[in-house]
Image (cartoon, rainbow over all chains, first blue to last red; front, side):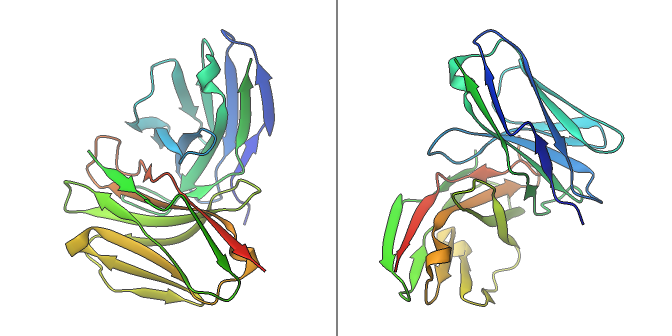
Length: 113
Length: 118
């Protein structure tokens, strides 16, 4: 059984640029969630996709957007990057809705300069 | 709004000691889920346990045990006979069935950095 994978591992961008992060969910999982983890903090929920539709969102501005594809993989897009967007971005998948445990990928470390 | 508090920022113990990590949560929902995750230095969050709000039974898995008490809104985690490999940051998390974040948006505490010294 393949776990959650994310790409790229590391990324360096300049303020104002746009970035796309990718996630492949665990086999059999149809729900993908994205989290932002700043250094020394707990992960913060960005949004969740279930069967290709966003069905939950945390306190993040609209410049954070996403997609989920028919194979349940997902993308996180961030426009107009700010220095505070520098963080570890974590993707998690789960087998459905209703409080299932979420399994996390290794994350993408984004640095904005 | 939902909230998770892990008051212990860092705990350091000597190997083989028992250690308890505290977690206190706040929610207005009657149906919610509690989780513990481990984050080793590699950075990947590892799922440890999930409990729903209707199941207050304590659970034991090897050296790990969890104590869920709704009366005090706590979900504490104990490691018995700690080992160096237990060194990591441990996160407690909460999701509400009908929360504003959506059914499965986890709210995490700030984490407890556990250091097991040999």
